Image (cartoon, rainbow, N blue to C red; front, top):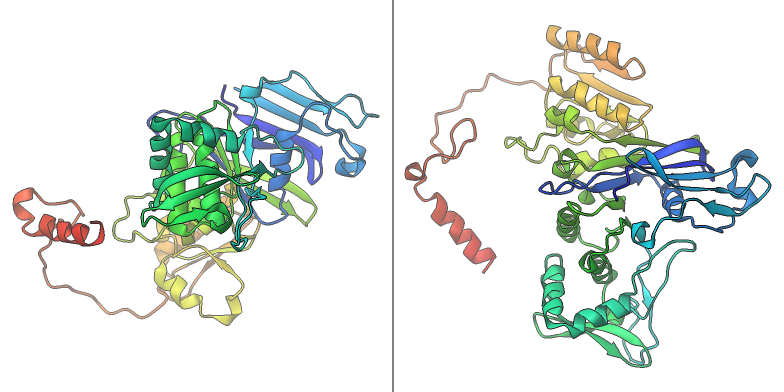
Amino acid sequence: MFFNKFTIKDYKCFKGEQSLLFAIPEEGKFGSGMAYIVGGNNSGKTTLIEGLSIKDKRNIKTSERINGADPEFYLYENDVVVRKNTLIRTESSTIKEDPQLDTKDTFEIISSRRHWTSTANNNYSQLGESFASVLEFANRQNNLEVASELRTIEADNTKYKEFIKLVQRVIPEFTKFAVAYEDNHYIEYISNSGIRHKTELLGDGVITVIRILLQLYVAKPNPIIIDEPELSLHPSAQRKLLKVLAEYSQKRQIVISTHSPYMVNWEYLKNGAVINRVVKEEDKYSHVFSILDFTKYDQLISSDNWKMPFAMDEVAKEIFFMEDGVLFLEGQEDVGLLKKEPVIKNVNIFGYGVRGKDNFKFALTLAQDLGFKKVSCILDGGESEKKIKEDLESIFSEYKIIQWNKNDIRDKKVYSSAEKEGYFDEDGKKKAEAELDDYDSKLKEVKDYLVP
């Protein structure tokens, strides 16, 4: 069972009906089953997750109902309602779930609070907590018994090696672990240097990785919601974890609520991952803006941009996390020079520019689909740019389109370059083996030195 939509209505900050869209896994496409929930603090992301986990017989507070309306929570498969949570009657505060989903079909929620308490006696400082008992948000589902599952893995040599190998994809120094006991169960792991680490000394990031990867390894059929998987993780570890999640999402629906651009990947979005941006307008009611199809922005986000590989990196992906008021500029020089100007120091500038005048339409379409209300762009001067300005104004009448009087952000002299010979041709295509000379040997030198 793969869900395609969840709707929430008249609950807390959601007035009227709002939809959260899910991605459908597709074998062979990394990231195809991942759906993102993004948005600012206090925008309503947590309320969406809470709504997904509301169960039969849950009581709804009067203060949680908007203007006395009846909250509704519907879950859809192929646009057909498969679970409906509503009040028994208007006068009641009790939720009735009809029909009730089988446990294997309900969401497994890994909350951002991934700590476990321990009564183990030791002299270590308490930097992290161990895996004895899971602490979860009220009313959230999490049916994975962490300590029990880890003991099962520990008892099976094949599973033990498999799980170690999985964790090493994110934490390379993780070589062994044990479920130890001292008044209560806790975890210790042994790094490749042979040093033992109790969970009381583990950084929160290590606990995060083990907890999330355990959920994947157990391979239950349930869809998963992971609240802020990036917590306490270095950016490189975030990227590695995302790659693992993307791999598993080919068969399992994975929902990620995140504040980190390192947890978003353009390739996965083009493979079918979904973005749900939650926006609270006038600090009162929240709306969800979703993007299912990223192909219409392909010219903007194309990964085949070897001349400017940084142009759509984490700085550009901040578009999913920005507050309203976004400025789009043509190129990296515009961004670099205008960021110094005090008059626009509080303006959200998109990435390193949109990489050329022809990309403004795709950039503004992306902003529009993400629900941005206040957006502007500045084009260079010139007749061709004037025509682009007119076209943009006709399409995006709600946004501010501006054009410089001068035809570039800075003075530029006529440029000519001496002919040079390289390992790739002028179109960026790698040359034939016979023309590569020392190319392979020099790369092997780098690999042998940096990755023994």
